[in-house]
Every structure is written in structure tokens, then in C-alpha cells.
Image 1 (cartoon, one colour):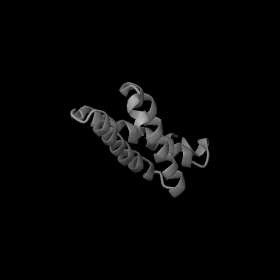
Image 2: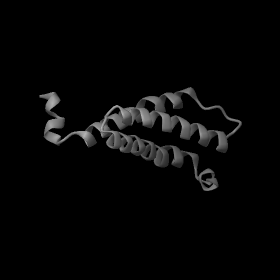
Image 3: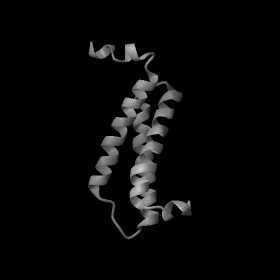
Length: 99
């Protein structure tokens, strides 16, 4: 995993990590057939992956609390929406809640 530390930190944080952790959550939701599993897996994997990444790339720097809040709120919400849409039987039934 040394190649990951050679990449730009902004590229990793904006392009690589979000789709990876959200897709992990959606896949877990699909495998378990439960919508709420997606955000939980996304939250845990985002926090663990980012903590590992920061501790190996910038060991002397502290992780900003705002960044942790971003991972803990935005990624699970996106995973919840994607998991809900992936597990909905059809798009017509998925949006029936709003009728």
C-alpha cells in the first residue's frame, strides 16, 4: 500500500476514498438485503480507512474534527440513498413514499 502514500492527499480524499467506502456499504446492504447496513458499513470503513491513511501519510498531524464530521454524516447519507435505491423493487415503488 505504499503507492497510496505517493498520491496527492486531495486526490485520495476526494476521488478514491468516497466511492470506495460508499460502494462497500451498498454491497453490504445488497448482500444482507437490509438498507440500514449500508450506512453503518460506510461509516465504519470510512473512519477506519481515513484514520489509517492519515496515520501512515501524515503521522505527526492531527485529523481535523470537521473532516471526521464530514465522513460521519455525508458518506453514510449518500450510502443510505444508494442502498435504498439499490434495494427498492422498482423505481415506481421507491418513490411511492412521496405520493
